[in-house]
Length: 135
Image 1 (cartoon, helix red, strand yellow):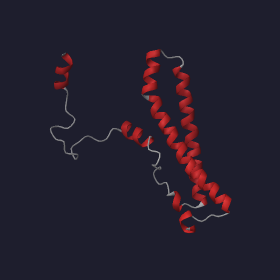
Image 2 (cartoon, helix red, strand yellow):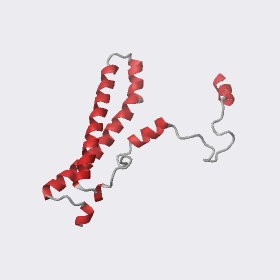
Image 3 (spheres, helix red, strand yellow):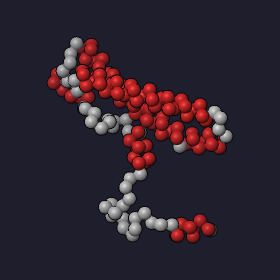
Image 4 (cartoon, helix red, strand yellow):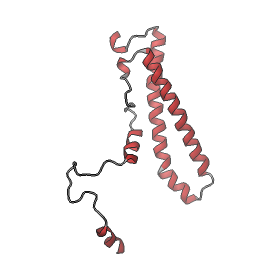
């Protein structure tokens, strides 16, 4: 039971308080993983697709195209590196790194699809006004 003793000797992150004002800051890795897995969450300063103009839709579609290409390249590179790893290391990467990157790829793919669909809607209608203004 040495692990039990070590657990008691460990430094507390909360310093005797469960008050959120005294809690440690959120871990950036957890925040990023959570954000990456939320397909409905747009990027900072991203406009609402319901009120976006064609110009804005084109801009955000291009942003997501760029990020999606990068994330897919990262995932491809991870798979290349995994090929030369031991089975144990490969399994850990499959359980930790790969799911995070896959969820990010999926998020960016969904967000790209939203903007791509809006661009096609504008182009099909020959319109540049926001969808909310047409209603």
